[in-house]
Structure formats: structure tokens, C-alpha cells
Image 1 (tube, helix red, strand yellow):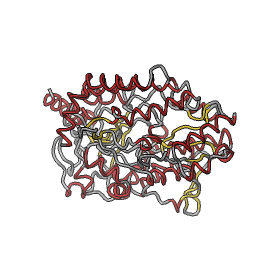
Image 2 (cartoon, rainbow, N blue to C red):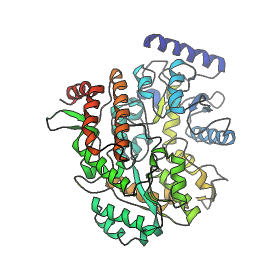
Image 3 (tube, rainbow, N blue to C red):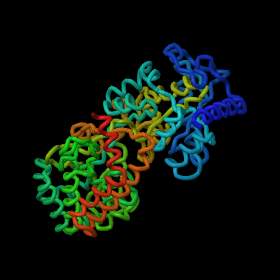
Image 4 (cartoon, rainbow, N blue to C red):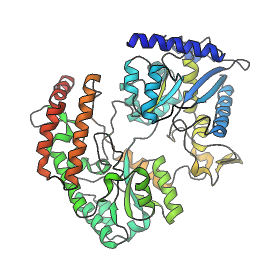
Length: 505
């Protein structure tokens, strides 16, 4: 099946290229052929015959975003031409439906066939079928991608472990934030910052509740938390309860998932306490990211969890617009350990891949390498000239429209010369969050499960969400955690533990 699908896809690639009338590139690898450093060092295309490279990305559509697409394509093409590479870049529309679900299926079946493709999940099965390019030789020959990876060690380890998906961004960690005026109004805030123990966090939450400023000290996006970690709160509390990795050793020395340990039980009991005291939004289970944010901006809730960097920057900008206040970033809780939730380095959870059956793989990489260069970072991070910034006296002067822009390749500010920018690319709070996720960073211990075990793990995660939600809301007593562990093992935990022990020894 796998071989048949790959052959069919290769034929589709050849037919689509012929039908489109696109020009090939003499220095590119043929479908399935490994690239060489020599190929990557040579220029591609000519002014008269540029190489067409197609690019599918979630947040840019050539129909909905026609004007943006046209300008981006032009600026990237001109930047590449200045270095001697002539490329005709074409953004593609994604199939209708949930991007994370439909794109991997459409790619595997040949419904879509981009040269560069962004995944937001579902890439593992695609890579297992040999449809994604191993990016190792490209990175080894690169200049700018390699520079950024050296500045982001977690991303460097992710691509080394899983060389099909490249994502250049800071550690993807959610950090707790609240508006500055409320933080400063609390008498417990300074003690919390000096020593963020569980006890000091409880005192801070209770004072926020008693102040009457908000209904809920903390609100969460509960409706869409579909992975093994049901609560965004894990980002700030996991380490305090000694939950330092996804997979850990139990008292018998066996490798197990940490959600089945006594540490997890203690953490859920703490969450249940927050819920029962009205410190945790009692409607969190049905909160979507939209209703969570609305609750935060309107002052119903004091705190949310925001992904460090760009996402937090959006929160900061909107809070300034709605309440005239910047945000304060809080540290993780301190206990048995002290860090934000550990970052999984087995693979990137989202990222950009190159089609293994593309006939223009070298040209496709040229695009990605250019976007990691200082010139490419300006295009990606600063937006469109005349709209999001103007050039004055050799500087990029950000306009009032800049806050509406987001990167269409990578979110990192690495390789962007901030000394040439007049204005805030990121707010003070967003910049502080990047410093804090580096200060309180920890690697995760995890493993990519073989395909036959994935359905078992999905069922186990569903069981965890059910029990965790019931325990937190007081529907079940905390002692029902033992029933959960028993059912977890019956649902596949015992079998997966055998596999984990074979991996970790």
C-alpha cells in the first residue's frame, strides 16, 4: 500500500508539473533522490525561466488573502533574485475543513501536492510513508537556518530527532499573565514573585477573589484541550508537583506515563481545591479560546495562560486597547522542581516540511533558508511596507497597523536586527516571557509511539480527560484516581509500558 501510494504520488507530481508548464531546475534532486551539498550551493532558475515552488500554509490563502499573497510572493522572489536564485513562489489554498485533519489526508491521497507544506499535526503518518523529505543534509549545508537552530536548542534537538518537520520558534510554553494594575493592587504579589511556592500562589489567588475585581482569578481554554494534558495550568504547576516529564519511572523502576503517578493525583487534588474555592473558573470545561480571551479582556477573569512571544504579544496589545494596561508575566510555581512545563523535544508539534516527491526540492529549501536570513526575517516579521511599516532614514518604522500582522513562516525574532526597527516588534511583556521560558526551561522525556500503539494511547488520553475533569469538578472523589490507573492499564497502559521499557531499558 505504502509503495503503491508513493508511486502514484510521484506520477501525480510529474503530471501536475507538466500540466502547469513550470520550469524545472537542473540542480534539483529528482523525486526520491537525495540532495547533495553541491546541489544546494548552486543557484536555481534564471530571470527568463524561474523555478515554480508551491507553498501551503495554514494562515495565508491566495483567495482570501490575495493582496497579501501577491506582495509576499513578490518580495520573497525579489529577495531570492538578489542572491542569484530565480523562483516563482505560489501560495496554495488548503482543502476545506479542519486544517490539522484534512491536510495530511489530502496530501497522502494526492489531492494536494505542494512543494512546501505546513503541518499542524498529522505529519507522523505522512513521514512514515516516506512522503516527507529528510531535512538533515539541507540544514547541514545551511547558514541561516543553522544559526537560528543554534539559538534555539530545543528546536535543534527536535529536528535532529525527527528530521522531517522544521519549526523555528522559541520554546512553545504557555505562561501565566494578568493585567499590571491588578497585580500591583495585590498585597501578596511581591511575596509571590520573590518566592512562588504553591502556598504563595494560593494566597495570591484568594486575594484576587476577595478583592472583587474579578469573578475568577484563573480562566482556561478547556473545551479544546485534546492532548494528554487537559489543563493549561499544567504549564505553571507540573514541576511544583514533581511532574517533570511525560514519561517517568515508577517506584518499581518501570517507565510509565506520569499521569498515572501519585504526583499527578496530588496535582489534581490541588486543582480540585482551586475549583471548589472558586479560584478556578467553574465554567472552564466549556471555555473555548475565544470565550476565554473575552473573559480576560472584559475583566471577568484575572489570569490566563498565553504562549510566550507572539501570542502573548497579541494579548498584551489587546489588553492595552481594552483596559489601557500592559501585562505582568508570572513565574512557574516552585515545589519539588521549578520550571514551566517540560518541552517535548522528540519532534516539533507543528512545522514546515518539504515534499519528498517534489522535483524542485533545492528551490523549495532556498525559500526556507531565505526566510531565516535577516532579509527574510524582515519580510516575515515586519509585514508589508506602506501598511505595517515605512522606511525612514534607513530604519523600519512600525505603523499603527503593525499589531494586525503575524508571521507567515516562522515566529522567531532570531536573525532580525532589532536595532534597525523603530517601534515595538514585541511588547515588554512578550519579550519578558521569552526570557522567562529560557530561564525556567526543562526538556521533556517522551517517545514517538509506533503506529499500532497510537489508538491505544488515544483511548487512554480520553480516559484521563474524563477522570481528571470529574475529579477537578468534584464529581468524583480524588481517591477515584486509583480506579483511573486501573482502567488506564486495562485500556493499553500495560502494553505500552512494555514498549516504553524496551525503549528506555
